[in-house]
Amino acid sequence: MRKIILLFASVMLLWGALPKFLMPEEAFIPHAKIDSAMGIEVEIELTKDIYLYEDKVIFTLKESDGITIANVKKPTSVLHHDEMVYLTSPTFYVTLEKDAQTSGVQKIAFEVAYQGCSEQGLCYEPLTQIYDFDIDTAKLDRVSATKVDKQETTSEAVADEALSEVDSIAASLASQSIFWSLLTLFGIGILISLTPCVFPMIPIISGVIVSQGEGLTTKRAFFLSLVYVLAMAVAYTIAGILAGLFGANIQAALQNPYAIYAFATIFVALALSMFGYYELKLPASLVSRVSGSTSKSGVAGVAIMGFLSALIVGPCVAAPLAGVLVYIGQTGDAIFGGMALFSLSMGMGVPLIVVGVGAGKFMPKPGAWMTMVTAIFGVMMLGVAIWMLERIVDPYITMMLWAILGVGFALFLGAFETTAHVFRRTLGLVVFIYAIILFIGVLGGSKSMMQPLDFLQSQQVVQTTTQKTKLEFTTITSIAELDTLLEKNKGKKILLDFSAEWCAICKQLDAETFSHADVIAKMQEFVLIKADVTKNTAEEKALTKKYGVFGPPAILIFDKTGTLVKSKSIIGFIDAESFVNHLNQI
Image (cartoon, rainbow, N blue to C red; front, side, top):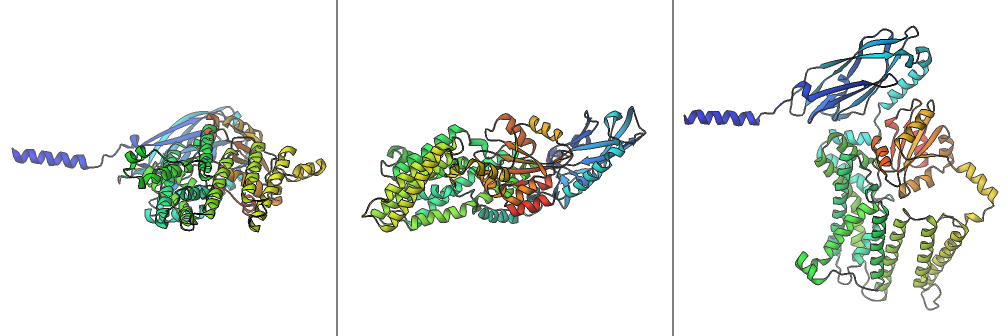
Protein backbone atom coordinates (compact mmCIF):
# COMPACT_ATOMS: atom_id res chain seq x y z
CA MET A 1 0.00 0.00 0.00
CA ARG A 2 2.85 2.35 0.86
CA LYS A 3 4.43 1.75 -2.57
CA ILE A 4 1.14 2.46 -4.32
CA ILE A 5 0.73 5.73 -2.43
CA LEU A 6 4.35 6.68 -3.20
CA LEU A 7 3.86 5.86 -6.89
CA PHE A 8 0.64 7.86 -7.01
CA ALA A 9 2.31 10.88 -5.35
CA SER A 10 5.24 10.70 -7.78
CA VAL A 11 2.91 10.63 -10.77
CA MET A 12 0.98 13.63 -9.45
CA LEU A 13 4.19 15.60 -8.83
CA LEU A 14 5.45 14.74 -12.29
CA TRP A 15 2.11 15.74 -13.79
CA GLY A 16 2.23 19.09 -11.97
CA ALA A 17 5.79 19.72 -13.15
CA LEU A 18 4.94 19.18 -16.81
CA PRO A 19 4.15 22.31 -18.83
CA LYS A 20 0.47 22.83 -19.54
CA PHE A 21 0.01 23.60 -23.23
CA LEU A 22 -2.99 25.49 -24.54
CA MET A 23 -5.21 24.21 -27.29
CA PRO A 24 -4.75 26.09 -30.63
CA GLU A 25 -8.10 27.87 -30.28
CA GLU A 26 -7.01 29.06 -26.82
CA ALA A 27 -3.53 30.19 -27.86
CA PHE A 28 -4.65 32.12 -30.97
CA ILE A 29 -7.96 33.98 -31.14
CA PRO A 30 -8.41 35.69 -34.54
CA HIS A 31 -10.89 38.51 -35.16
CA ALA A 32 -11.82 40.11 -38.49
CA LYS A 33 -14.23 42.93 -39.26
CA ILE A 34 -14.97 45.15 -42.23
CA ASP A 35 -15.16 48.93 -41.98
CA SER A 36 -17.13 51.57 -43.88
CA ALA A 37 -14.41 51.86 -46.54
CA MET A 38 -14.67 48.11 -47.23
CA GLY A 39 -11.27 47.49 -45.70
CA ILE A 40 -10.76 44.46 -43.45
CA GLU A 41 -9.20 44.85 -40.01
CA VAL A 42 -7.70 41.64 -38.63
CA GLU A 43 -6.45 41.07 -35.09
CA ILE A 44 -4.90 37.81 -33.91
CA GLU A 45 -5.16 37.80 -30.15
CA LEU A 46 -2.23 36.01 -28.48
CA THR A 47 -2.43 34.61 -24.98
CA LYS A 48 0.47 34.68 -22.50
CA ASP A 49 3.80 33.17 -23.68
CA ILE A 50 2.52 32.74 -27.26
CA TYR A 51 4.18 34.29 -30.30
CA LEU A 52 3.27 34.40 -34.00
CA TYR A 53 5.54 34.03 -37.05
CA GLU A 54 5.37 37.12 -39.28
CA ASP A 55 5.84 35.24 -42.57
CA LYS A 56 3.17 32.67 -41.68
CA VAL A 57 0.39 35.28 -41.51
CA ILE A 58 -1.20 35.13 -44.97
CA PHE A 59 -4.48 36.60 -46.24
CA THR A 60 -6.26 35.21 -49.32
CA LEU A 61 -9.67 35.49 -50.97
CA LYS A 62 -11.10 32.02 -51.58
CA GLU A 63 -14.33 33.18 -53.19
CA SER A 64 -14.38 36.60 -54.85
CA ASP A 65 -15.75 37.76 -58.18
CA GLY A 66 -13.62 40.62 -59.48
CA ILE A 67 -12.31 41.60 -56.03
CA THR A 68 -8.66 41.25 -55.05
CA ILE A 69 -6.36 42.25 -52.19
CA ALA A 70 -4.62 45.53 -53.01
CA ASN A 71 -2.41 45.99 -49.95
CA VAL A 72 -1.79 44.63 -46.45
CA LYS A 73 -0.58 46.98 -43.72
CA LYS A 74 1.41 45.00 -41.14
CA PRO A 75 2.55 45.97 -37.64
CA THR A 76 6.25 45.93 -36.74
CA SER A 77 7.66 42.52 -35.84
CA VAL A 78 10.70 41.75 -33.66
CA LEU A 79 13.59 39.30 -33.88
CA HIS A 80 13.00 36.34 -31.55
CA HIS A 81 14.81 32.98 -31.68
CA ASP A 82 16.30 34.03 -35.05
CA GLU A 83 12.82 34.57 -36.54
CA MET A 84 10.74 37.70 -37.11
CA VAL A 85 7.70 37.28 -34.89
CA TYR A 86 4.90 39.12 -33.11
CA LEU A 87 5.18 38.86 -29.33
CA THR A 88 1.95 40.77 -28.67
CA SER A 89 -1.41 40.63 -30.41
CA PRO A 90 -0.87 42.09 -33.92
CA THR A 91 -3.44 44.04 -35.92
CA PHE A 92 -3.44 44.08 -39.75
CA TYR A 93 -5.37 46.17 -42.25
CA VAL A 94 -6.26 44.66 -45.62
CA THR A 95 -7.23 46.97 -48.49
CA LEU A 96 -9.41 45.56 -51.29
CA GLU A 97 -9.87 46.63 -54.92
CA LYS A 98 -12.18 45.64 -57.78
CA ASP A 99 -11.87 45.44 -61.52
CA ALA A 100 -13.73 47.74 -63.88
CA GLN A 101 -16.55 45.25 -64.65
CA THR A 102 -17.50 44.40 -61.07
CA SER A 103 -20.45 46.22 -59.51
CA GLY A 104 -23.07 45.87 -56.79
CA VAL A 105 -22.69 43.91 -53.58
CA GLN A 106 -20.36 40.91 -53.85
CA LYS A 107 -19.80 38.07 -51.39
CA ILE A 108 -16.22 37.10 -50.52
CA ALA A 109 -14.66 34.34 -48.44
CA PHE A 110 -11.70 35.88 -46.65
CA GLU A 111 -9.14 33.39 -45.29
CA VAL A 112 -6.67 34.16 -42.50
CA ALA A 113 -3.75 31.70 -42.23
CA TYR A 114 -1.26 31.82 -39.34
CA GLN A 115 1.19 29.76 -37.30
CA GLY A 116 3.00 30.28 -34.01
CA CYS A 117 4.63 28.71 -30.98
CA SER A 118 4.57 28.63 -27.21
CA GLU A 119 7.54 29.83 -25.16
CA GLN A 120 7.30 26.52 -23.28
CA GLY A 121 8.59 24.66 -26.34
CA LEU A 122 5.54 23.69 -28.39
CA CYS A 123 5.00 24.87 -31.99
CA TYR A 124 1.47 24.62 -33.39
CA GLU A 125 0.47 23.40 -36.83
CA PRO A 126 -0.61 25.99 -39.44
CA LEU A 127 -4.12 27.27 -38.69
CA THR A 128 -6.75 28.93 -40.85
CA GLN A 129 -9.97 30.83 -40.29
CA ILE A 130 -12.48 31.87 -42.98
CA TYR A 131 -14.80 34.89 -42.77
CA ASP A 132 -17.69 35.69 -45.11
CA PHE A 133 -18.25 39.36 -45.97
CA ASP A 134 -20.57 41.33 -48.22
CA ILE A 135 -18.58 43.95 -50.15
CA ASP A 136 -20.22 47.07 -51.52
CA THR A 137 -18.09 47.55 -54.64
CA ALA A 138 -19.36 51.11 -55.07
CA LYS A 139 -17.05 52.03 -52.22
CA LEU A 140 -14.01 50.45 -53.83
CA ASP A 141 -11.90 52.44 -56.26
CA ARG A 142 -11.55 51.14 -59.84
CA VAL A 143 -8.25 49.58 -60.83
CA SER A 144 -7.59 52.30 -63.40
CA ALA A 145 -7.96 54.98 -60.74
CA THR A 146 -5.72 53.27 -58.21
CA LYS A 147 -2.77 51.95 -60.24
CA VAL A 148 -0.58 54.93 -59.38
CA ASP A 149 -1.57 54.89 -55.73
CA LYS A 150 -0.99 51.16 -55.57
CA GLN A 151 2.50 51.50 -57.02
CA GLU A 152 3.32 54.27 -54.54
CA THR A 153 1.91 52.23 -51.67
CA THR A 154 3.94 49.19 -52.74
CA SER A 155 7.18 51.16 -52.95
CA GLU A 156 6.51 52.78 -49.61
CA ALA A 157 5.67 49.41 -48.08
CA VAL A 158 9.04 48.10 -49.27
CA ALA A 159 10.76 51.14 -47.76
CA ASP A 160 8.83 50.64 -44.53
CA GLU A 161 10.26 47.14 -44.13
CA ALA A 162 13.38 48.77 -42.72
CA LEU A 163 12.99 49.21 -38.99
CA SER A 164 13.13 52.64 -37.42
CA GLU A 165 15.95 53.31 -34.97
CA VAL A 166 13.59 52.82 -32.04
CA ASP A 167 12.26 49.50 -33.35
CA SER A 168 15.80 48.35 -34.17
CA ILE A 169 16.81 48.90 -30.55
CA ALA A 170 13.72 47.03 -29.35
CA ALA A 171 14.49 44.14 -31.71
CA SER A 172 18.13 44.13 -30.60
CA LEU A 173 17.09 43.79 -26.96
CA ALA A 174 14.96 40.79 -27.89
CA SER A 175 17.79 39.04 -29.75
CA GLN A 176 21.05 39.94 -27.97
CA SER A 177 22.37 38.45 -24.78
CA ILE A 178 21.47 40.22 -21.55
CA PHE A 179 25.09 41.12 -20.78
CA TRP A 180 25.81 42.81 -24.12
CA SER A 181 22.45 44.59 -24.17
CA LEU A 182 23.02 46.09 -20.71
CA LEU A 183 26.62 47.02 -21.52
CA THR A 184 25.57 48.70 -24.77
CA LEU A 185 22.83 50.67 -23.05
CA PHE A 186 25.26 51.75 -20.33
CA GLY A 187 27.54 53.20 -23.03
CA ILE A 188 24.60 54.87 -24.77
CA GLY A 189 23.62 56.40 -21.42
CA ILE A 190 27.06 58.02 -21.15
CA LEU A 191 26.59 59.53 -24.63
CA ILE A 192 23.10 60.82 -23.69
CA SER A 193 24.62 62.50 -20.64
CA LEU A 194 26.61 64.76 -22.99
CA THR A 195 23.36 66.23 -24.40
CA PRO A 196 21.22 68.96 -22.79
CA CYS A 197 19.09 66.19 -21.23
CA VAL A 198 21.31 65.93 -18.17
CA PHE A 199 22.74 69.46 -17.97
CA PRO A 200 20.12 70.77 -15.46
CA MET A 201 21.21 68.10 -12.98
CA ILE A 202 24.82 69.33 -12.90
CA PRO A 203 24.14 72.38 -10.67
CA ILE A 204 21.74 70.27 -8.60
CA ILE A 205 24.24 67.56 -7.66
CA SER A 206 27.06 70.12 -7.30
CA GLY A 207 24.95 72.22 -4.97
CA VAL A 208 23.85 69.21 -2.94
CA ILE A 209 27.47 68.09 -2.44
CA VAL A 210 28.79 71.57 -1.60
CA SER A 211 25.90 72.15 0.83
CA GLN A 212 27.29 69.33 3.01
CA GLY A 213 29.67 71.94 4.41
CA GLU A 214 33.07 71.60 6.03
CA GLY A 215 34.84 68.29 6.49
CA LEU A 216 33.61 66.81 3.24
CA THR A 217 36.15 64.25 2.01
CA THR A 218 36.57 62.96 -1.53
CA LYS A 219 35.39 59.53 -0.40
CA ARG A 220 32.19 60.93 1.09
CA ALA A 221 31.62 63.13 -1.97
CA PHE A 222 31.83 59.99 -4.14
CA PHE A 223 29.45 58.13 -1.84
CA LEU A 224 26.86 60.93 -1.84
CA SER A 225 27.16 61.32 -5.63
CA LEU A 226 26.60 57.58 -6.04
CA VAL A 227 23.54 57.75 -3.77
CA TYR A 228 22.14 60.61 -5.87
CA VAL A 229 22.70 58.76 -9.16
CA LEU A 230 21.32 55.46 -7.83
CA ALA A 231 18.16 57.23 -6.66
CA MET A 232 17.89 58.94 -10.04
CA ALA A 233 18.31 55.59 -11.81
CA VAL A 234 15.63 53.97 -9.66
CA ALA A 235 13.22 56.82 -10.51
CA TYR A 236 13.94 56.46 -14.24
CA THR A 237 13.49 52.70 -14.01
CA ILE A 238 10.14 52.83 -12.22
CA ALA A 239 8.77 55.59 -14.45
CA GLY A 240 10.08 53.82 -17.56
CA ILE A 241 8.50 50.46 -16.69
CA LEU A 242 5.13 52.12 -16.06
CA ALA A 243 5.44 54.07 -19.31
CA GLY A 244 6.34 50.94 -21.28
CA LEU A 245 3.53 48.85 -19.82
CA PHE A 246 0.79 51.47 -20.01
CA GLY A 247 1.97 53.64 -22.92
CA ALA A 248 2.18 56.78 -20.77
CA ASN A 249 4.08 59.95 -21.60
CA ILE A 250 7.20 59.47 -19.49
CA GLN A 251 7.98 63.21 -19.34
CA ALA A 252 4.53 64.60 -18.69
CA ALA A 253 3.72 62.53 -15.60
CA LEU A 254 4.88 65.22 -13.15
CA GLN A 255 4.93 68.26 -15.43
CA ASN A 256 1.85 69.80 -13.84
CA PRO A 257 2.11 73.34 -12.43
CA TYR A 258 1.73 72.32 -8.77
CA ALA A 259 4.67 69.90 -8.90
CA ILE A 260 6.88 72.40 -10.73
CA TYR A 261 6.01 75.26 -8.35
CA ALA A 262 6.75 73.00 -5.38
CA PHE A 263 10.10 71.85 -6.74
CA ALA A 264 11.11 75.37 -7.79
CA THR A 265 10.37 76.45 -4.21
CA ILE A 266 12.69 73.70 -2.92
CA PHE A 267 15.51 75.03 -5.11
CA VAL A 268 14.90 78.57 -3.88
CA ALA A 269 15.06 77.29 -0.29
CA LEU A 270 18.33 75.49 -1.02
CA ALA A 271 19.74 78.63 -2.61
CA LEU A 272 18.83 80.80 0.37
CA SER A 273 20.51 78.31 2.72
CA MET A 274 23.66 78.53 0.60
CA PHE A 275 23.54 82.31 0.90
CA GLY A 276 23.77 81.79 4.68
CA TYR A 277 20.26 82.89 5.67
CA TYR A 278 19.65 79.61 7.52
CA GLU A 279 20.81 75.99 7.65
CA LEU A 280 18.59 73.31 6.15
CA LYS A 281 18.70 70.44 8.59
CA LEU A 282 16.31 67.76 9.78
CA PRO A 283 15.52 67.76 13.52
CA ALA A 284 18.13 65.77 15.42
CA SER A 285 15.49 63.50 16.98
CA LEU A 286 14.06 62.60 13.55
CA VAL A 287 17.50 61.96 12.07
CA SER A 288 18.36 59.73 15.03
CA ARG A 289 15.20 57.64 14.53
CA VAL A 290 15.60 57.25 10.78
CA SER A 291 19.32 56.65 10.46
CA GLY A 292 20.52 55.82 13.93
CA SER A 293 23.40 58.28 13.70
CA THR A 294 23.92 61.85 12.66
CA SER A 295 26.69 60.83 10.27
CA LYS A 296 24.05 59.52 7.87
CA SER A 297 21.80 62.56 8.06
CA GLY A 298 22.71 63.78 4.60
CA VAL A 299 22.21 60.50 2.76
CA ALA A 300 18.40 60.42 2.88
CA GLY A 301 18.15 64.00 1.66
CA VAL A 302 20.55 63.37 -1.23
CA ALA A 303 18.62 60.24 -2.24
CA ILE A 304 15.29 62.09 -2.14
CA MET A 305 16.76 64.93 -4.21
CA GLY A 306 18.10 62.47 -6.80
CA PHE A 307 14.78 60.62 -7.04
CA LEU A 308 12.63 63.75 -7.32
CA SER A 309 14.93 65.66 -9.66
CA ALA A 310 14.91 62.70 -12.07
CA LEU A 311 11.12 62.82 -12.21
CA ILE A 312 10.58 66.58 -12.21
CA VAL A 313 13.51 67.68 -14.37
CA GLY A 314 12.60 64.72 -16.55
CA PRO A 315 14.68 62.68 -18.97
CA CYS A 316 14.78 63.49 -22.65
CA VAL A 317 13.07 60.84 -24.73
CA ALA A 318 15.93 59.77 -26.97
CA ALA A 319 15.75 56.81 -29.36
CA PRO A 320 17.51 54.35 -26.96
CA LEU A 321 15.09 55.15 -24.14
CA ALA A 322 12.09 54.89 -26.47
CA GLY A 323 13.47 51.60 -27.83
CA VAL A 324 13.56 50.11 -24.33
CA LEU A 325 10.01 51.33 -23.67
CA VAL A 326 8.80 49.82 -26.95
CA TYR A 327 10.44 46.51 -25.97
CA ILE A 328 8.64 46.55 -22.61
CA GLY A 329 5.35 47.43 -24.28
CA GLN A 330 5.66 44.66 -26.89
CA THR A 331 6.91 41.86 -24.64
CA GLY A 332 5.58 42.82 -21.23
CA ASP A 333 9.02 41.83 -19.91
CA ALA A 334 9.23 44.43 -17.15
CA ILE A 335 12.12 42.66 -15.38
CA PHE A 336 14.63 42.80 -18.24
CA GLY A 337 13.18 46.12 -19.37
CA GLY A 338 13.78 47.51 -15.90
CA MET A 339 17.36 46.21 -15.94
CA ALA A 340 17.88 47.89 -19.33
CA LEU A 341 16.48 51.21 -18.10
CA PHE A 342 18.61 51.03 -14.94
CA SER A 343 21.75 50.37 -17.00
CA LEU A 344 20.92 53.26 -19.36
CA SER A 345 20.29 55.70 -16.51
CA MET A 346 23.44 54.64 -14.66
CA GLY A 347 25.39 55.47 -17.82
CA MET A 348 23.71 58.87 -17.80
CA GLY A 349 24.76 59.28 -14.18
CA VAL A 350 28.49 58.60 -14.62
CA PRO A 351 29.35 62.25 -15.49
CA LEU A 352 27.20 63.38 -12.56
CA ILE A 353 29.31 61.25 -10.22
CA VAL A 354 32.44 62.84 -11.70
CA VAL A 355 30.94 66.31 -11.16
CA GLY A 356 29.93 65.47 -7.58
CA VAL A 357 33.36 64.09 -6.69
CA GLY A 358 34.97 67.14 -8.27
CA ALA A 359 32.72 69.46 -6.26
CA GLY A 360 33.85 67.71 -3.07
CA LYS A 361 37.54 67.32 -3.93
CA PHE A 362 38.17 70.86 -5.16
CA MET A 363 35.92 72.65 -2.70
CA PRO A 364 38.07 75.40 -1.14
CA LYS A 365 39.00 75.43 2.51
CA PRO A 366 36.86 77.51 4.89
CA GLY A 367 37.22 81.21 4.30
CA ALA A 368 36.23 83.91 1.83
CA TRP A 369 36.59 81.64 -1.21
CA MET A 370 34.42 79.01 0.44
CA THR A 371 31.70 81.60 0.95
CA MET A 372 31.91 82.78 -2.65
CA VAL A 373 31.81 79.26 -4.14
CA THR A 374 28.82 78.32 -1.98
CA ALA A 375 27.01 81.50 -3.04
CA ILE A 376 27.72 80.78 -6.72
CA PHE A 377 26.07 77.39 -6.34
CA GLY A 378 23.17 79.20 -4.70
CA VAL A 379 22.84 81.34 -7.82
CA MET A 380 22.91 78.17 -9.93
CA MET A 381 20.08 76.72 -7.82
CA LEU A 382 18.02 79.87 -8.45
CA GLY A 383 18.79 79.48 -12.15
CA VAL A 384 17.44 75.91 -12.10
CA ALA A 385 14.28 77.17 -10.37
CA ILE A 386 13.74 79.79 -13.10
CA TRP A 387 14.51 77.22 -15.81
CA MET A 388 11.77 75.01 -14.41
CA LEU A 389 9.28 77.88 -14.25
CA GLU A 390 9.85 78.53 -17.97
CA ARG A 391 7.61 75.53 -18.66
CA ILE A 392 4.50 76.98 -17.04
CA VAL A 393 4.75 80.79 -16.82
CA ASP A 394 4.81 83.53 -19.44
CA PRO A 395 8.21 84.10 -21.12
CA TYR A 396 8.11 87.76 -20.07
CA ILE A 397 8.05 86.71 -16.40
CA THR A 398 10.99 84.33 -16.73
CA MET A 399 13.00 86.94 -18.65
CA MET A 400 12.34 89.40 -15.84
CA LEU A 401 13.43 86.82 -13.26
CA TRP A 402 16.65 86.13 -15.20
CA ALA A 403 17.29 89.88 -15.33
CA ILE A 404 16.77 90.26 -11.57
CA LEU A 405 19.02 87.28 -10.88
CA GLY A 406 21.66 88.75 -13.19
CA VAL A 407 21.63 92.12 -11.42
CA GLY A 408 21.88 90.46 -8.01
CA PHE A 409 24.74 88.21 -9.11
CA ALA A 410 26.58 91.18 -10.65
CA LEU A 411 26.34 93.14 -7.39
CA PHE A 412 27.52 90.09 -5.45
CA LEU A 413 30.57 89.82 -7.72
CA GLY A 414 31.36 93.47 -6.91
CA ALA A 415 30.74 95.01 -10.32
CA PHE A 416 30.87 98.51 -8.82
CA GLU A 417 33.33 97.90 -5.98
CA THR A 418 36.72 99.48 -6.64
CA THR A 419 38.37 97.16 -4.12
CA ALA A 420 37.15 93.97 -5.84
CA HIS A 421 39.48 91.85 -7.96
CA VAL A 422 39.62 92.96 -11.60
CA PHE A 423 38.33 89.58 -12.80
CA ARG A 424 35.32 89.74 -10.47
CA ARG A 425 34.57 93.31 -11.47
CA THR A 426 34.83 92.51 -15.19
CA LEU A 427 32.60 89.46 -14.94
CA GLY A 428 30.15 91.40 -12.76
CA LEU A 429 29.93 94.27 -15.25
CA VAL A 430 29.31 91.88 -18.17
CA VAL A 431 26.52 90.12 -16.23
CA PHE A 432 25.05 93.49 -15.18
CA ILE A 433 24.99 94.84 -18.75
CA TYR A 434 23.31 91.68 -20.05
CA ALA A 435 20.75 91.81 -17.23
CA ILE A 436 19.89 95.43 -18.09
CA ILE A 437 19.51 94.43 -21.77
CA LEU A 438 17.07 91.72 -20.65
CA PHE A 439 15.11 94.34 -18.71
CA ILE A 440 14.89 96.49 -21.82
CA GLY A 441 13.88 93.47 -23.89
CA VAL A 442 11.04 92.64 -21.49
CA LEU A 443 9.77 96.21 -21.65
CA GLY A 444 9.98 96.13 -25.45
CA GLY A 445 7.98 92.90 -25.72
CA SER A 446 10.82 90.53 -26.64
CA LYS A 447 10.66 86.85 -25.67
CA SER A 448 14.15 85.87 -26.78
CA MET A 449 16.94 85.41 -24.24
CA MET A 450 19.50 85.34 -27.05
CA GLN A 451 18.13 88.37 -28.93
CA PRO A 452 16.35 90.50 -26.32
CA LEU A 453 16.64 93.64 -28.48
CA ASP A 454 15.11 92.15 -31.62
CA PHE A 455 12.09 94.44 -31.20
CA LEU A 456 14.31 97.36 -32.24
CA GLN A 457 14.42 96.08 -35.83
CA SER A 458 12.09 97.76 -38.26
CA GLN A 459 8.72 96.07 -38.69
CA GLN A 460 9.39 95.53 -42.38
CA VAL A 461 12.63 93.67 -41.68
CA VAL A 462 10.94 91.56 -39.02
CA GLN A 463 8.08 90.63 -41.37
CA THR A 464 10.46 89.80 -44.22
CA THR A 465 12.64 87.65 -41.96
CA THR A 466 9.59 85.88 -40.55
CA GLN A 467 8.23 85.12 -44.00
CA LYS A 468 11.56 83.65 -45.04
CA THR A 469 12.37 81.62 -41.97
CA LYS A 470 9.18 80.65 -40.14
CA LEU A 471 7.49 77.35 -40.86
CA GLU A 472 3.72 77.26 -40.57
CA PHE A 473 2.41 74.33 -38.52
CA THR A 474 -1.23 73.48 -37.92
CA THR A 475 -1.57 72.73 -34.20
CA ILE A 476 -3.70 69.83 -32.97
CA THR A 477 -4.26 68.22 -29.57
CA SER A 478 -6.50 65.20 -30.29
CA ILE A 479 -6.88 62.14 -32.50
CA ALA A 480 -10.04 63.57 -34.08
CA GLU A 481 -8.26 66.76 -35.17
CA LEU A 482 -5.38 64.75 -36.63
CA ASP A 483 -7.68 62.33 -38.47
CA THR A 484 -9.50 65.27 -40.04
CA LEU A 485 -6.24 66.75 -41.33
CA LEU A 486 -5.00 63.37 -42.57
CA GLU A 487 -8.21 62.87 -44.53
CA LYS A 488 -8.18 66.43 -45.84
CA ASN A 489 -4.58 66.18 -47.07
CA LYS A 490 -4.64 62.76 -48.73
CA GLY A 491 -2.31 62.74 -51.71
CA LYS A 492 0.26 64.83 -49.83
CA LYS A 493 3.18 63.91 -47.60
CA ILE A 494 2.58 64.87 -43.98
CA LEU A 495 5.03 65.63 -41.16
CA LEU A 496 3.72 65.45 -37.59
CA ASP A 497 5.84 67.03 -34.83
CA PHE A 498 5.05 66.11 -31.22
CA SER A 499 6.09 69.04 -29.02
CA ALA A 500 5.43 70.69 -25.66
CA GLU A 501 6.21 74.04 -24.11
CA TRP A 502 8.10 72.38 -21.23
CA CYS A 503 10.26 70.28 -23.58
CA ALA A 504 13.80 71.72 -23.67
CA ILE A 505 14.88 69.55 -26.62
CA CYS A 506 11.81 70.67 -28.60
CA LYS A 507 13.00 74.26 -28.25
CA GLN A 508 16.49 73.23 -29.36
CA LEU A 509 14.94 71.46 -32.36
CA ASP A 510 13.01 74.62 -33.29
CA ALA A 511 16.01 76.90 -32.84
CA GLU A 512 18.74 74.81 -34.50
CA THR A 513 17.02 72.48 -36.97
CA PHE A 514 13.66 73.88 -38.06
CA SER A 515 15.19 77.34 -38.56
CA HIS A 516 17.90 76.10 -40.97
CA ALA A 517 17.41 77.30 -44.55
CA ASP A 518 17.89 73.86 -46.14
CA VAL A 519 15.45 72.27 -43.70
CA ILE A 520 12.86 74.96 -44.34
CA ALA A 521 13.16 74.49 -48.10
CA LYS A 522 12.76 70.71 -47.80
CA MET A 523 9.86 70.87 -45.35
CA GLN A 524 7.86 72.92 -47.83
CA GLU A 525 7.17 69.59 -49.56
CA PHE A 526 5.17 68.41 -46.53
CA VAL A 527 1.94 69.37 -44.83
CA LEU A 528 3.20 70.40 -41.36
CA ILE A 529 1.21 69.47 -38.25
CA LYS A 530 2.27 70.06 -34.64
CA ALA A 531 0.81 67.90 -31.87
CA ASP A 532 0.92 70.07 -28.74
CA VAL A 533 0.97 67.80 -25.66
CA THR A 534 1.87 70.50 -23.16
CA LYS A 535 -1.16 70.08 -20.89
CA ASN A 536 -1.14 66.26 -20.92
CA THR A 537 -4.94 66.12 -21.14
CA ALA A 538 -6.85 62.88 -21.70
CA GLU A 539 -7.09 63.66 -25.43
CA GLU A 540 -3.36 64.37 -25.67
CA LYS A 541 -2.58 61.13 -23.79
CA ALA A 542 -4.78 59.18 -26.21
CA LEU A 543 -2.96 60.78 -29.15
CA THR A 544 0.51 59.90 -27.88
CA LYS A 545 -0.58 56.38 -26.93
CA LYS A 546 -2.08 55.71 -30.37
CA TYR A 547 1.21 56.43 -32.10
CA GLY A 548 3.49 54.95 -29.42
CA VAL A 549 5.05 58.30 -28.49
CA PHE A 550 6.45 58.24 -24.95
CA GLY A 551 7.21 61.96 -24.92
CA PRO A 552 8.34 64.82 -27.12
CA PRO A 553 10.15 65.53 -29.32
CA ALA A 554 9.02 62.98 -31.86
CA ILE A 555 8.62 63.46 -35.62
CA LEU A 556 6.31 61.12 -37.55
CA ILE A 557 5.91 60.89 -41.33
CA PHE A 558 2.68 59.93 -43.13
CA ASP A 559 2.63 58.88 -46.78
CA LYS A 560 0.21 60.16 -49.43
CA THR A 561 -2.45 57.67 -48.35
CA GLY A 562 -2.35 58.97 -44.76
CA THR A 563 -0.51 55.87 -43.53
CA LEU A 564 2.22 56.20 -40.90
CA VAL A 565 5.69 55.29 -42.23
CA LYS A 566 7.13 53.88 -39.00
CA SER A 567 10.65 53.39 -40.35
CA LYS A 568 10.96 57.15 -40.90
CA SER A 569 10.02 58.19 -37.36
CA ILE A 570 12.52 60.29 -35.42
CA ILE A 571 12.72 60.32 -31.62
CA GLY A 572 14.74 63.02 -29.88
CA PHE A 573 16.99 65.70 -31.34
CA ILE A 574 18.39 65.61 -34.89
CA ASP A 575 20.70 68.19 -36.45
CA ALA A 576 19.82 70.08 -39.63
CA GLU A 577 22.10 68.21 -42.02
CA SER A 578 20.98 64.77 -40.83
CA PHE A 579 17.34 65.86 -40.96
CA VAL A 580 17.63 67.04 -44.57
CA ASN A 581 19.25 63.73 -45.53
CA HIS A 582 16.45 61.90 -43.72
CA LEU A 583 13.73 63.83 -45.55
CA ASN A 584 15.45 63.25 -48.90
CA GLN A 585 14.96 59.50 -48.41
CA ILE A 586 11.18 59.83 -48.13
